[in-house]
Image 1 (spheres, rainbow, N blue to C red):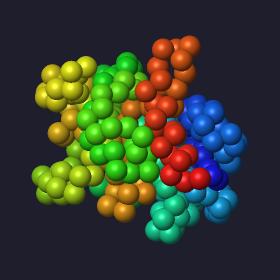
Image 2: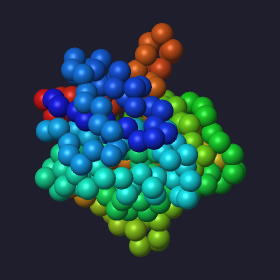
Image 3: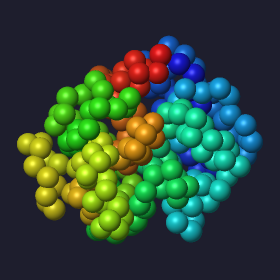
Length: 229
């Protein structure tokens, strides 16, 4: 499995995701600077978390116009898997690879904590090793993680089963009380119709270390490796 990780000015989770991917694939990912105009041959392209361009303007809007994003879009059209985590999710929506947008958290404060998620769609290359309705514990760390889209888009996402993860509590209950940031329908991550692009605000790469007591991200990475190898 060949992996490329795009590094933007302000990325700060690029090394974290590289460590997790190497742990499960036993291969070093390519680290690709955002000003490059070509990508290595890649089965998976990752847009990591962080604060690209200092989160000026809208989060992800400047990164979405980086030269490398033309190649990311082309790779997506050819069927390569594209993963955007946190700021990467914001970049995916700003570039049109996923619908909707990410706005300020409802409480207008930065959130950094472990958060329960319910697996809503386990029929994808990113989630196949989870069971539907599994409750997993994955950290979040964001200021603009409030997923918003029009009613029409939300209905389409729901009808086509494109929601990968929802925020919930430890019992799996989904309501306003279990929604940390105000996201529509408690959405924490979505997949495109072709199933090869996933954007999510929580950080699975921070949940693969037994010494830290967080391992619920392991099935995320084994899903990807098994699907793409």
